[in-house]
Amino acid sequence: MDLTNVDYREKIPNNVNLTEDRRVLKALEGWHPGYLDWWKDMGPEGFQESLVYLRTAVSVDPKGWAKFDYVRMPEYRWGILLAPQEENRTIPFGQHFGEPVWQEIPGEHRATLRRLVVIQGDTEPASVEQQRHLGKTAPSLYDMRNLFQVNVEEGRHLWAMVYLLQKYFGTDGREEAEALLQRRSGDADSPRMLGAFNEKTPDWLSFFMFTYFTDRDGKMQLEALAQSGFDPLSRTCRFMLTEEAHHMFVGETGVTRVIQRTCEAMKAAGITDPYDIEKVRKLGVIDLPTIQKKANLHFSLTLDLFGNEISTNAANAFHAGLKGRYRESRLDDDHKLEQSTYPVLRLIDGRIQNEDAPALSALNMRLRDDYVNDANVGVGRWNKVIESFGIPFEIRLPHVAFHRHIGEFAKIKADVAGKQLSDAEWASRRSEFLPNDADKDFIESLMQPQWEAGKFASWIAPPKVGIDNKPGEFEYVKIA
Ligand code: BYC
Image (cartoon, rainbow, N blue to C red; front, side, top):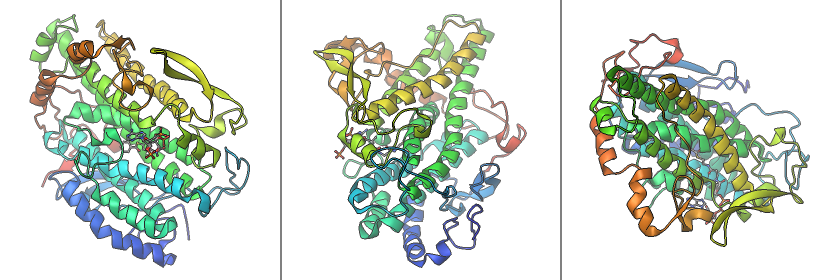
């Protein structure tokens, strides 16, 4: 069988030869109706009959893996796609460094691997649930299509993890696959596993910030899992990363277009002071300080997803060869880290300072540092737009101690510069840093649908180019 192109003969498109793997095929076919029920209950609200111009993976060849066409979302072909197997691949880190990768799970690592796969799997449907109300306030058909593209692909990423559970984890894998359809984002009794995936995504600026900041955590975690000595996990994550790039593109360009529109409107109205919030808002655009507050919120919630700075779980997963570092193979060291240290920002004697920690224990911190560097690149591009209008304002990522709920800084309050605040100071200054009710109400007031092809809501600029090079007036969603 050709394992580059995807086999569409089965109900579940795949490049893993499911036709000859009857046990797994049957298990997945058994899971499919529950997935569709979940999609109908918790996927995009409305629009299920609408034709959406979506890309579907038809190959895992990096040069041409997707085709675009109009699809009704419930008819999207969610499939199982793994990057091609690399011949003679060896484990790139940890105690088994240099040994051949595993095609089956070593018994002693089963529980740890299952936990990593389940946590990864849990985030995927969670994000779809968080975004389910956004279709009805889409600022254009272009944006609506991008939202739905992200949603169907997060659905596919759930399939990717469920395939691993069904194929490699037996009965408990099947139970976990069911449980992934039972938990619900924000539910009091049965919430999603990680904090940020139980928050609301109430408006489109939040959606863009989420796809910029939180999908980027997805990228970092998938890059780390793509290094895994368990080869099927590595191959699965490698293909997911291909899709993930578009999600971050949606976030980065979404925020850019919001900033662009605000700056254009300020310039046209002759407003030079970015802090003249009332005047800026009267123009029907989102003022830059409020955009900064949204960035503060989503960045800080996302930092929590890296876990504790010092983590035995992370050390064990690395040592065992299950979860590596960001782009492990490009790093120039012994890939075992048994003797080395890494500087970790900690709270020592009440002060925030660096302390050298064993590098193995500091892997969450290291991945978070890589993440912050990566996240700063797009922020630089946002600032270029503001600068091009001559407006004296710069978006900045807050200090890593700001607004944290997991790790070293969960027990303190700090401002965006990392200066510690008393509880009373925090309470009185919180709305300087994070969106307050008035900000939320204002943004909500702007969330009016604009569904005429080629038109955009007042608060966002059109994109520079269309999806699949389509012209400006292209009807990305034919609303039924
Ligand atoms: N919320 O030793 P620690 C994505 C728990 S996003 C709640 O520091 P570890 C996507 C932790 O579970 C990427 N609990 O943990 C984006 C542990 O509990 P147990 C998702 C938390 O394991 C957008 C305890 O605290 N993928 O793909 O080193 C749209 C001790 O913590 C949190 C992954 O995350 C939290 N934030 O690190 C769609 C990859 N943080 O086990 C999709 C897989 C920690 O002691 N997961 N805890 O009861 C992992 O690699 C790790 O489990 C974590 C945590 C990085 C999440």
